[in-house]
Length: 373
Image (cartoon, rainbow, N blue to C red):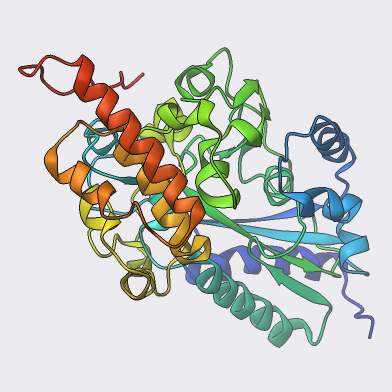
């Protein structure tokens, strides 16, 4: 069914959509045209360079990711929305990163899984639109389909894609989630955001594994988030020491970004830190059996990596931790774990621990913390 809506009505509707979005808890809502030709060229270059690593689905989806009308026929606009997630009252990130007896989890994963929350809110926004204009074609996304969500958000005026490849807003930094509604309504599109990174290279310099190989180009094969979340197999030896105590994701490029001094803590209760995961002790986490892991990560994005990868990641962090009897005991308790993946990383960690103990004087303090930036 094709709706007949006049331009003035569409303009009024666009204003209303942004107001309804704010009422639903989104900090900003914008409307994007769907011509992503420039971004499609960059995506093709990125894939051709092999920067996607083992994420074969990135190549498999092809141009559907950069051509919304091919993914959802009839699409002419994308409504883009962002929601802040920085959890209030969570432990200060650099303090956790500099204490190698603790585990660091990306701040986005400390609360409940954002996928369901954002999808529900976007669905309610779509239903509000339908209640006003009648049935129309749409589809809701929250990191759940091949879509260039950051490119669409940039075109919708929500921010610009920074040198670290995250979306940045001058008034809010980058600690936010994105979601979209593809629609067949020819709404007036917002003006695309302009870039404001200037000469700053803080994100490139701070990356522990130098995954940001050039401004705006991230090699996932070097990225700690890729290794601790997306990679199913063994973490390459060359990156294990650099991973430090990061056991789920990495936020260093965001922590170093000057624009994040303007970021505001989320008001969403569901995004607040749960189970003490904002500054957890590594030995305690490593003791979780699978049942405990599933219980503690219920409703969390962390659960998707599974218990084996969870132990793999923590084993690497324990190898990088200051030697102690508790850490050695925790690792030795997992030496005969049924998973070869876990056993391999535990053996590596024990080797590092034993080597560190052998070369450090008995009265030496813990290793010097990595500079903040």
